[in-house]
Image (cartoon, rainbow, N blue to C red; front, top):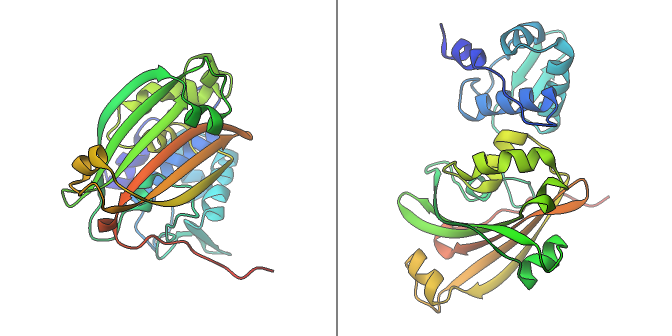
Amino acid sequence: MTRMDEFLAEPLTTTVGQPLRVAAYTRITRGIRDGVFPLGSALPRETELGTSLGVSRTVIREALMLLEEDGLITTRRGVGRFVTASTPKVGLEDLRPFEVALANTEHPITVKPTTFVMQPNTDFVSSNLNLDPEANTWFRESVLSRADEPIAIVQEHLPAGRYLSDISPAIASSFQHAAEQNGTLFAGLLERCGPIFSASSCQITPSVVGVSRGKQLGLAASDPVIILTQVIEHDATPVYLAKCIVSSRVGHLTVIQTPSN
C-alpha cells in the first residue's frame, strides 16, 4: 500500500455540525501540505477519492471546488485536477494560523503552550469579542520558535461555556481537542472544523517587548516588537481573539497588495 493509499484509508472524522465537504477539504488540504499529494502532481479522480474517503462524488466535487478557490489545485479541462506547482504564498492578509504566517521555507515553526486556563473577562477581551462583563473566557499562551529560537508569543482568547456553544456548537465540541495539540488553538480548530470562519481583521501595532515578555523571547525590555491583534468571526459573530507579539528576529512580514479597481 502506497503512502497515498494509507493516507486516504484513514477514517474521515467530522465534528457536530461540520459538513462532509469540509471534512474532505481538510483531509485533502493536509495531504497537500504534508506532501502526500506532491506539488504539480495529479490528484486521484473524483470517484477514487470518494470511494477511499467513504463519501459521495458530490461531496468530493464540492471539496475540490473549495480547494481550487483557495489556490491549492487547478483544473485542466479534459485532463484532470492537479496540485498547484507551489502552495499559495502566505501573508498577513490570509486567514492562517500564526505559526504558518511566520514560517519560512527553511525552518518550520514549533509551538510550545505555556498557559491554558479559564479566567474572568477583561475589558480587552470583552470589547473585541462583544461579551457580557460576567462571561468567563479561555486563555492560552504559547511561545513560537524557529530553529530553537523564540520569535513570538501568541495569546489566544475564546468565550467559555454557553457563550461559545451559542456561537458555534462545532467549535465548542472541538475546542478541548484543539487545546491538546502542539499548535495554536486556531490551528487545532481549523484541523477539526475546517474553513468555518467567516471573516477576520488583523491590527498591526509597533511596541516594545517589556520585562516579562522579553524574558520569554530572550530580549531586553526595551527591544522593539510588532503586535498583531487578530479577531476572527463565525457567521458575523466574533469568536476568537489573539495577540501575537513578534520579535524582530522573525524577519520581514509579508502583506500582498493588488491594484484597486
